[in-house]
Image (cartoon, rainbow, N blue to C red; front, side, top):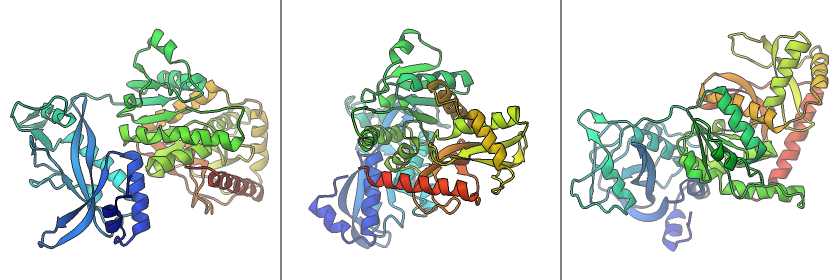
Length: 469
């Protein structure tokens, strides 16, 4: 967001929480770059006036299978972001405001997110997502019947809204849409595995040109599959419930830091756009290194941490459960947690498999360690092949789309879990559903396992400081 204007800087300098406000404005720009900052004089209900910063721009609203741009303006109070913005429609001359549940006759917008504003849990990025969702249910703008709309003006598309006396006629929208971003073996394996689960109505496979994991999209176009759309345009992912990112930008000729930085740079052109097209989606990361790239995706997305997760140790966790159940006759839920590296550690649940009770992690016990070590020994040569990871991705995706509330070990923000103070992403047991992830409560681990987690926290934190985000 261009905040270099002398007028903008002068007004922004008077804001009570200047640095936090600038950080929030930059987050907004990453997701909604068309929202522009300008200065203006706002008149309050008591006729007092104040010069403030406001954001003006358009938000994309889907209706009747098409996308429309609704013009809005957000007045930012001088205590922003700790107080909510005043949000208004900004209709053009050929538009009329439709009073409704979320918009009054003067065009002021009223949403639960505004009424319950609580920074930092609340943000403008989340507010705009809510605004888009509510406007898709009940569009607040329609066109004056002048008959001279300019078909080249994107805003004129609003005139196509069909509004009856009984309200808005909703268009048929796929119940469950999933997008996979990035080709190659893992992308293809993910597509085929998600399809096999049968829980999606539409699956979009997007081959990213900049990714080194290209390929497969042409074959899918040749051998067309039901429910699958192949594209090379990120906008095809719009309206997804889950977006899986498998894209990587590997090069064997670079240092490890340089390779990861290349992936970070690749993500900067992908993640903000994906969130813009699917603001209510859960983002599932499978790029490597998965814990770092999930952390990067979260920072670039502006989404709450429960809606950005990584595939992490889910595959190892499912293998561990199977090994304990079939090979070692131990019928309890178990997970592999920590960094997807040699430092990952197994933990067991105190709840048996198939129980209807909420799963929880058992406190560290030396009696369970030999059993878990034996299971790890049986598993150690299985590897992480593309088709195996694809099946794991499909398993996670299904839990989100079908709202199963199943516990998976996925890469998530670990800060605050089990005494972890640093902002890092590690695989932890989480309940997955339509709203994303909810971590299980942290526990005290045995000394060896705790030491491995601390080593991972240290190494991941160090790597993050060396990257340009």
